Image (cartoon, rainbow, N blue to C red):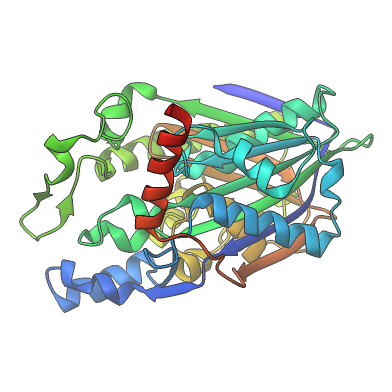
Length: 378
C-alpha cells in the first residue's frame, strides 16, 4: 500500500454547490418489487433527496465547478489573480478534449501561468486521491497555492429507468489549499486492485467501444424492467462489498500506525456517502466508535455525488473540527484513507446554485459546432 505524508500543506477554505433541481427517492419506487421492499430499502439505505442537473438546464460538471469557485471567491474574498494551480477531479467531464481544467481556467480568468490538469475516473476517491496530487505540488515548492475542484454529474451516468438511478446526484466542491511554514500534518494510505476492473466500469464511451450506430439504440433490461446501456455503469455490488470489507480495515489500520493516532485522538471520521448501509458497514469493520463516525445524513440530504461526496460531508457535518480521518472507496478498485487537520478552515457549507447560466439549446449547440467545423475547414 502507498503511504504519503505532508507537513506544510493547509486546507484553507471549502464550499460545496448543488444544482437547483431537487427530487426525492420516491421517483424510483416503481423499480422495486413492492411498496414494502421500497420502504425497507429507503430505511436501510437512508434514501432521501437528490439535487440533479436536468436536460432543460443543460448544466455540466464544468458549470457546477465554475459556480463553486465563484462562490468561494465571494465568501473567502479570494483573489483569483494569485491562484497558481487548478486541479479538477471529475468522472463526468464536459469535454473529452480539452481537459475541463483548461476550460475552467479560461472561464474563471485565472492567470496564464496557472498550472492546470484534470484527474478523471476516480469516482468517490476523487477528493482524497486528488488531494495527494495537490499536496505533492505544494509540498515540493512547485506551487504556493492551488484550487481543487471536485465535480461530478453522476445522475447522468445511469438510465432514469434503472433502480440504481436514485443513488446518484450532482455537486461541485471548491477547495483552496496553501503552503504553510508551520507543521500541518496530512497523511494518506491507498490500496489499488485494478485487476478487478471488469466488475466496475462503463464499457462504452471511450476508445475501447466508441459510441456508434450499432449501440445507440441497444437497451438491455433485467426481469424487473431496469434498463442498461453500454455507456452506463456496470457494477457488481457483491464484488464492491468484498473489496471494501477486505481493504478498508487494512488501510485504516495502516493510517493509524502511520500517524500514531487512535480514534480517541481525532474529532471525527468520515466515509464517502454511498449510502447508509455502506457507511455503517465501513464504520463497523474499521471499528470506528459510533460517536466519532459521521452519519449518513449527508447522503439522505444530497445522495451519492462521487468525487464531491467527501467534500460534501466536510461542508455538511464537519464545521469547526480539528484532526479528522477520512475513508473512501472508488468504484471498488481503489480504497483510500487520509488524515487532514481541519482546524481553522473557512467552511462555507453547502449551497444551492443561485442561478442557471443561459446556454444554447442542445440543437443550437450541435449546429454551433457543425458551423465551427466548416469555418475551420473552409
